[in-house]
Amino acid sequence: MDGAKNDICSALLEAGGGATPEASRNECVVRVFELRRMLESTACQTTVEPIEPPLVLETHRGFLLKEMAWMAADFRVERKRHNIMRKKRSKAVVQHFRGARGRAQKQEREHQVSKKKVGPA
Image 1 (cartoon, rainbow, N blue to C red):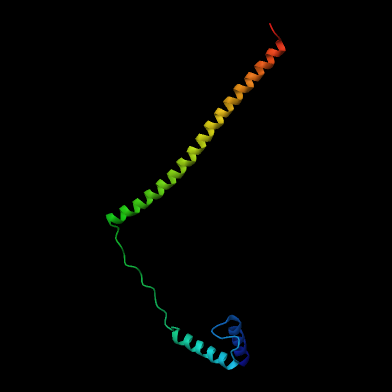
Image 2: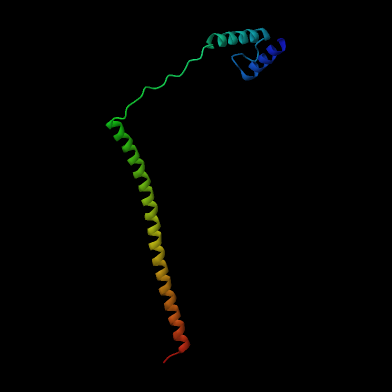
């Protein structure tokens, strides 16, 4: 028992549980005794059973509130999906016109090269 008190005292001193580092061993033992007494007085031997919430009937207002919450979540998801699709479409359009410009330039270069190969007529 005395060894346990020393362990608790040293733990309290290390953790700073209300005792200063200069506290004597007796002060530490007194503090441990006070804390144990407080713990025993606050500990409840009887268990309290949880109370079941009363049965709530579904009212029209409650149904509307649930539906509004569902619709808000649905609109949020739809808006996110539409933004993603909008970005994809705009990137596709930009890519298409980049490709069309590149194809036109390539065709023009090939035409110039074929003109050089054939020579002046």
